[in-house]
Image 1 (cartoon, rainbow, N blue to C red):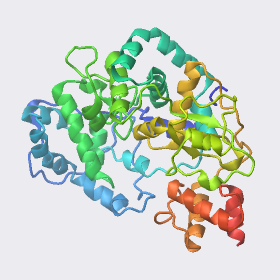
Image 2 (image 1 turned 120 degrees about the horizontal axis):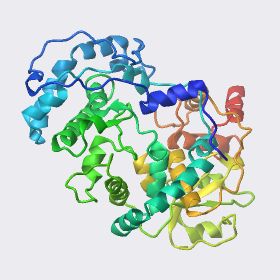
Image 3 (image 1 turned 90 degrees about the vertical axis):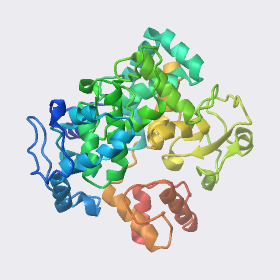
Length: 449
């Protein structure tokens, strides 16, 4: 199925997400234009030409550092915040000349505060993400990419033991094979987030790593562009991930994941290898569950061998056996009892280290299989199921907490493993099929009790 054309609202959100609007960049300056230590507070700069301004509103997360007052106060101290990072930069080998050259004229992009706490009105179901990310066009383009770069993919697969189709799938999902890599300055984005907002400690490391990349010359400044959060290149490396995993596969002395195809492919494979990829093994299997199956067994902490799952009546829809019956897997039913089921192996969890969303990891695995020539998912998704809004998911979690079910904290509107476990416990107690799916029917049931 071809990917649906996003609506204007959805496209606007995607543009913000990937930084595709003109956003300005770091202002060039001489080496003498650096920010001296102890710089006084500065007025909040106006947005650059063509740049969407900050809304001026507090973030929806409710975090104390995301109030409008806190954002303005932190932004006024931006020059001093950057200057305070010089001692750590020099400990990392960044020269004073390089630090001053790359930070001179740097201003915060406060629009990122809106994106950090974005609560988009539209919500996508699991199957909608797969429709979008595993489209016929993307499958075909992936096959062309693999054929055009067969020698490089083969060399990388031999060197790192990672399935070339999975590497290509990450490239396809992360940036649509390089067409959506983002246009925001990685240095400016990470600098903004290091000094303003609720994740400053995390982004200070990303900002300093971005400075190291520029100081070493691995990526030229004008090409160090990416998403609002600082991910860059066709497979969207964060600066710290680049430090850990990037390799110079083409031997030119630079680890360039933006302009060197061999470096980008090999660095992505090295990332998966270092995260525990098991060579010669797949990521998972679509499976069919027998009538009356106990959905309490669908738990990411319950690992059984494929042979043990088969003894419980689980089989592949094509009737084939499992190639390695001793491999361990857990059962995932992302859309509940009305949707497909999957047995996920260790490599699925490795993909989730690249991005911790199950929908993302399933899209990567399925796209890899489709590019290899395998068929689509056999079982139907419950496309008539209405997807809950963020407010409804929050309400559902609140009902569970009020009834004494542990969701792993306070309601957030995001349904994770602990919320699914709580849903299962409630469903079992209420005499419902305990599939852990946050459905509209379940919310109605909670409201009525």
